[in-house]
Image (cartoon, rainbow, N blue to C red):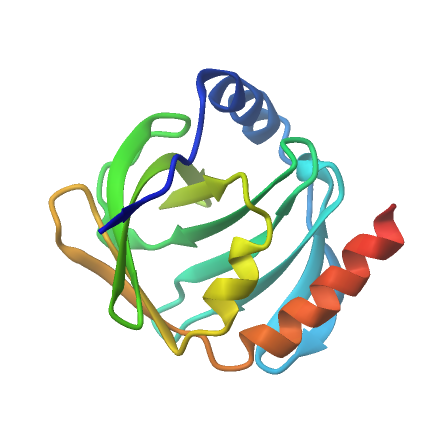
Length: 165
């Protein structure tokens, strides 16, 4: 099992401040089943987002303010997630297991958990896989995400990020 150190104390504090002042995402188009967007609350970091059949939201992108990459999953199966609180989670990329620390989010009363990593290129490793399965702190499956089209969409997100400066 690989461990990813997702957040340090300073990052948690900056995320809390960022989440509190969340701004609307800016749409940059639709590529291979994913929306490419800019998130002003993450320093105009570009991201890709998809909505699943059960209306869960998945985001993979760049947090410019923290110089890091991330993914966030908004899904009712998270249960009682509190915004800003940290949770031990596990995710699986085509059989490769990672332990991580996730930060709680809430969007339109739907709980979410986000994993941040200092190697921004790790998001491209995610996009090279077929499925990412995310498990909660109790080891229960929250969601299995079909990553089809994510590599092409992230190419556009990378170009988007270069345009942001």
